[in-house]
Length: 475
Image (cartoon, rainbow, N blue to C red; front, side):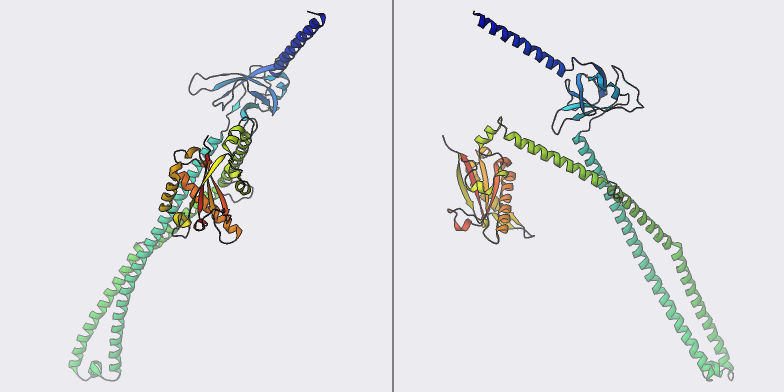
């Protein structure tokens, strides 16, 4: 071996040792092996994905790592988490510092977050156990919100039933009062008629006496008329006794009305309705507080759903970006498409969707598929479902891997109406294909073509739909 070769070999070996030393230094620095640190502990009932080697952060800054996690020995025990932090963070940590488990980023890994303590807290030393706060999981929050909604619905139903019962009671009391008033009115009218008749007879007698006619007028001249008058007086006394009895009956009826305490019943019923209304107002106030700065249950639920919707949207964007990653995009390129909803009308007409597959189109007229329900809304009749099954039968064996596009056509009205009507028809057919025939939703798409009929479209099918099957070409 020449001297030059020995020199090169020596340099290579020296460089290798240097890189090895740098690697060790980098790994040791990464694991905080060369920095002064202290070990602490905390406890959790649920880890939520935290594991040994996870990052430890103090007030949002990288400060150490999790060393090990001890499994509890009892079902009601907690996991002991041993972790290490740099010594320079020790002045920030106090006995009231709280350790929590959080997510790094939107869909990142779990980290152990330690909040800085307060000046009132006692300083900590190596081996101290910090208090912890259990991690919040989205599924648990959504379940709690669902339970609250169920309880609120039950409370509203209970209040509604109480109000209905109170209204029924008031209606029953009103019916009884009407019947009672009608009976009293009838009896009072009878008493008034009898009294009027008696008064009329007495008036007639007095007028005869004043004119010198009748029994009283002749009484002064004929004794027999006097005795006759006595008999009449006796009859008159009997009539007055009857009137007195009728008056007693009227008083007894009035007393019966008072004994039933209908007025108190009305007041009690009104009080019940007022209490039910107050409870309903309290429930509505709990759902939607009157203050502008307060948040009610519905506002909190709306904010939770908005946050969940935003998280799902971000996750969908991440998955869409992952599709186009060089590790996975080969599969989607071979399949011919990434997402059917992302295919534009222009790209579809130019044949850019699955260009390596063979297209086969089946035409279906509108009178074969659609009908109107009682409200005038367009639906797919049962005969239309059978018609779709007949066209789909040759492809059912390979349908799970066959790309299917439902083309909607509508050649009437303005361009906007053509697009909307053709899209609605295509969506109706797609829903039936997925629900009734079990096709995969990610392999069935819609394409509203409006009045853009292909040259080979038969005239009677220009207001219907077409099923376009994209089959793999035979090799």
